[in-house]
Length: 432
Image (cartoon, rainbow, N blue to C red):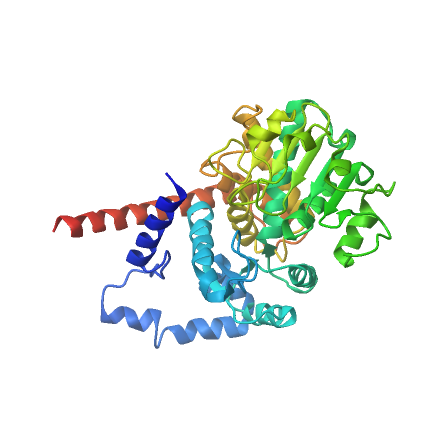
């Protein structure tokens, strides 16, 4: 289907449904008498209980399954700074994915400020209502300031999906891609293009996953990043300079790719990279071209240059690096054990689990990550994350992997039944 046709159908559907999410009661309501239990006077007893023990809000309200999807609309994928109102359809879509793949209730909160400190303050003010925070589509460098601050100060799970989500799924894909080409993380030379939210996370996560900083080159619009580079540097690029390229290699794209085994790029929409650049790499290497909606280099062009494995963010090519593989299961697991944060151990556990699921399905050049619709992804990622949270000491309660898997599958099954009932009701109305 052509892009124009998709746009037309999308407009029709969104206008018809007036968006993609709604609030639905989870309690049975038979009549007037139920008001006494779910509202006044019965609700006063619940309020009194939570007043005595604030943590009991997890038991008596939906806080333990409620996520805020917060955005100022300044860096919406493929669209840029479009503002909070225009960002709302994307945040609604994110909320839908949380529910479909993790059983998590998510509320879009599009805010009318671009001030990083105000966004941080808002998130702290929202903390009594929500069990976790998902930051979305906020421009750099303020997204880094917000993210780094919240990771230090917030005591509920926090996740910046353009940052953490992309880094997680790239790491999972890289683990398996290296297995396919028969190389170890500590032995490969990796080039990363881009230092935005995604690029910064890719660097951080690959380093956490075993890629050596001395074997990594990172470049931006100013060229290769190295210590004491003049121009275009900030504290986050300085972090990159401290941890990569100790030889202070200089140059642009071609120099950055010289003798690389893997190339991961998250820059501007393409195609703008040609096969002759990929020829600078070792033959039979790995290329992750992450820009959306059009990758920096097409898989056909990358393979023409000698790449063996190619991944993109698109569903119409093999090896889709899709954030939906990560955030629903990550939050499901974090919420189930009431984690105080999402830490390094939880992220690595999620990446290793994603890689293992794909491996069980049969690793190949065109299968290094699971499909987004694989029913094993949500439950098993959730279980791995919850277990890592318990082991690393950030969980408030302890659950077994089996408990988390059972809980996740149950919640997904309940939502599936609910959606089937909606469909049947809609068909009945049409027939009438």
